[in-house]
Image (cartoon, rainbow, N blue to C red; front, side):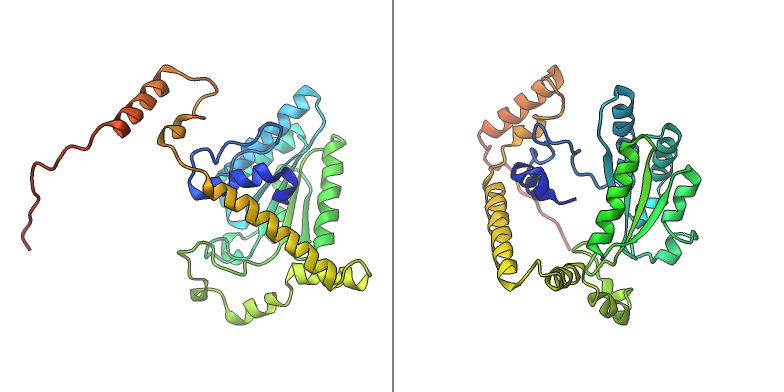
Amino acid sequence: MGFGALGDEFFGQLVAYWRGHPDGGRIPDGVRCLPPQIALGSQVPHAMGLAWGLALRGEPGVVCTFLGDGATSEGDFYEGINFAGVQRVPLLVVCINNGWAISTPTVRQTAAETFAAKADAAGIPGVRVDGNDVLAVLEAARAARRRAAAGYGPTLLEVVTYRMGAHTNSDDPSRYVPADVLRAWEERDPIERFRVELEQAGLWDDDRHADASAAVEARLDRIIDAALRREVDPPEALDHITATPDARTATQRAEIVARRSAPIAPETGTVSWRA
């Protein structure tokens, strides 16, 4: 999903979330997207529930959720797609197979022939597509969406790509990623690949690329700068705990305010230790 398609305010909230701002998990009104979360696979039952809700209400729409190859080893993944298959909910589950999860290679992550094959257990279609082919991914996603919107139920879409960098800033992929394999995947960069395809079709050139890049960079700078300027006020951590204020959070808020405004007592003792 292109975060930009959901609006500047939404993207700004994501920046605030990763910065640690307590308001970062609040999704703007009118944007149909749940807050970010990092518990592996736990979003699949949530997505299934949202899709089931649409079906029960007779409302149009299709729910889409994303997870990595490692998350398919979690029970929530199987529970979610199983229930989705039984209820034939309008759901698209996109598994981004980057080859390594954190540091576990695909061959040790599953004995299944593919991650898409896991759909068989849920009785739903499993589709495998080249994740570095923009148009192939677009067509596969559109087909799955059309199927779901028509009432034929969910699809598991496996998008095969490769993680070119570290999983986190504490990870060192050079310890487990073969250098020759990494170099081979570098030549399949999806952005450059799509750029070449557009240029060959006469739909793109250096000038358009420069203009688009400048516009994107300017937009990102504006959104990120605004998010980083947002001050953090400790009581704000309680703003979105409940839909309406309650006695417990009101008490906690009062304690935070009182402690923040209380004068700092002078030191009255010392601390010592011996080697």
